Image (cartoon, rainbow, N blue to C red):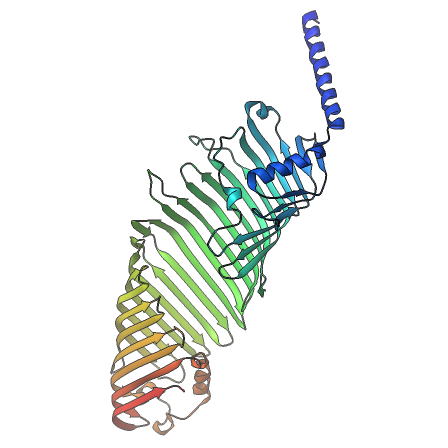
Length: 507
């Protein structure tokens, strides 16, 4: 072997042994616990919070350089009240980047975290000081590769509403992803995976086991934030709903206003499915939204579709709602066509209804208007004539969401009858329903089965009893109902009457 090469290898071996010996000596003789007072004083000076280090601090050499902190606790800002505590915190560092004044953290692992996040009555959050960016220039540039939380408990309290939610058994992993071509190093791209349980202290019925995963991109300089590939799964119970299941997927992005760009929020590929059991009924709701974009001057979106179904002993009800695209601005939106389809089935009764109208709404006034309604209703059942009842109707509906009032002017036709109706409903304080219905002529005998004798048309039968049970009006017990029905010519039980007025008023 060349003697120069042999000499070089010998020097490298001696230097390696010397460095290893220094590291071992440093690890044996260095006591990181001696720096506890310095660390707590630094936190007190920089963050005005009290840090309590109850456990020992251990230096780690393998698999990478780092430290392990035992039990610790951190106070609220400028207070001795505890904000968060943890059983153990592990931080591992990369050595060589320190020479370039870059603090590269391989991973941070927090075990047994218990934190309290509070939204104060004035809207401030008790962690705002921890999230604030320091005005002093950073001596080291921080780069974190992996963050994990195990067996964590997070409590969120809203002082304005008095509600309190507890996130238990939180297990979270976040990995920093490599930046895409053209992105600066300041852009953070991470893959986040988390599992936890949600409970609301004031309502024991709220208990949800949840899994959440998404890719996150943060560009603080450009004030751009994006959540891509969101996958949310939640199972448990809510007040009045058992066996609750929620699945949600989609992509979200938000750009906060800067000097060169306006605020923009967008949603794409959003799909939500909700299922559950309420009483003896099963509930299933689906929402699909391919694209929705919001800016201060413009709101645009593709077709939005919602489908809902309830099934149980009282029958099955299926509904579909679709908006064929929306456009407008931040103060209101429009849709050229809103379509609603309903189908209700109980025993041998079937009712189908379709409705379509343009939509005009205003967020500032809370107004929702359907100015040109066109609809059809088909009803079939053993208590009706073989042909059933076919009704067409039109009109307009106006809803005031702020005052929780609704008004409708409807005209319709079925058989040889022409109907005009005015309806007004209020859900504010004491719910109420007022109506005024005018019918030019009404032949009830024509609507009943042909095989019955005229004198038996108004007798109760098993089928009519079943239909009365299906037409459950118990929900109107707490509603103030008042109105009148006027019929120009009425035929019932083979008896003719004219100018019939029926006044209805609840107790």
